[in-house]
Length: 573
Image (tube, rainbow, N blue to C red; front, top):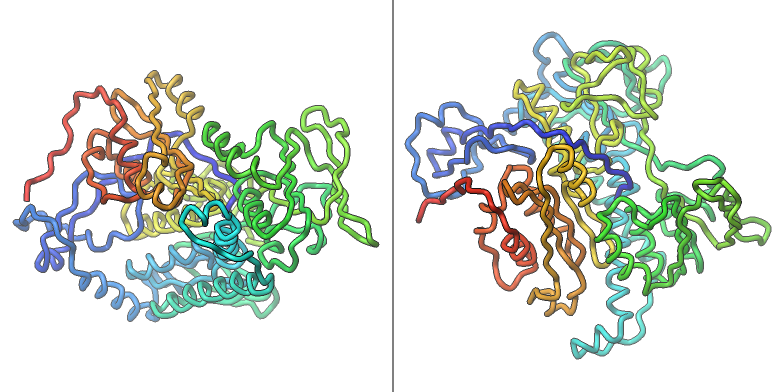
């Protein structure tokens, strides 16, 4: 659950996918397509140059996992041995969040002696104070909504007594989930031989750093390559006093220490929307305070309007747009939380709002202080570490810092946990000797409201701006969940899917979904963008019936492509 997404509109470099291993080919008949853009996770099973010499059947079946397992086991066995080149480690990662964890596991698979430094707890923001516990709360809110909707239950022929909840039980569910995932991440790294170093990591110079409590007892280590993966913290604007009780951030809200009767949420992005879903399901009234002129400013405008009609208008939610919360005073001495509003443009006073609690959901700020960046001449930009398209750190003179990378929220390219992991894996590919550029336009995002919102690629305004600059046409097509059998069987026909594409080439520019399980459905589109698949190819894909995936099937089939370029012809089996 993140609040900020920034996308580069530059065209990604095509990356050729490696071939299968010879060992795997001996056991199976898997041959991967050539010249595909690779932006996924692991690809060790496609890594042998000797595959070209093999004669392989055109029948496609899965590879054996033995070769991949042997590589991981070999890496595990060698992680305790000295690194090549006289360094203590081949790779040291500062920060054990989702991004650092993904990079560490991929590094071990590549045979790199790897260590990860963590000054707090393994899992970072996502596992401990973000994506994971919030999904536990949203799971509760989803069930509460369904049980409270008498009309919905009667449509199934079901009769349900009044639904209630135990606040502490709900809080325990979120906390227990975070603990379980944190333990899983820790155990996975330990099992593969990643050295987990406890303390604050500080860069002392090129390929040199220390970790510890920040005193004379710190340990100095060297590494051939270093990745900064320190993540982010909640952003609290000036004038807002957070007491952790009546004025809170998402960190506090996830503990669910109380459910206020009336709560103001400052910011209507991902974080604010998801918490509005939780609080209204548990009985709270919500007031949004949004600085921009419309709610949900980061979403495709058409999707945002529909989402507002479904997620906000029918619920106990009101809102103020085009205003800043210039000052927020916590509740005390029997007085409520007082929020002073000013016009976002003129800065003139716009009155006050008095509520029981206020949640600050204005985004996140990079956590990059104390890293020792000044020791290697790096100046942050609004706290973010400047990097190029390969996540290589750029110093104050605009030059690349050798052997130093930054991934995830700390670089600000795309503040999503899975984007951090993908960036980390991309970096490991590079330090292992294989060039790799991640296509950020292929990385999906989701808001886990009820129904969900998901997206990948460009919004319609972004696509039209790009088209005007580059001289091509943009086409739009949409399909409705109301025409989907599975959605109707669930009595969840509210929702649409929207495809933005180039009719001349069939290139997918963006896909946006609002509806049941939208967060799960988006990946067919994101993978298509990642692999450079055109509409004229993907429209022949077969989807099981009746499934929600047919929403995407109908979406691609409804697109009108005028390109005469030949499509790939699959071999008959």
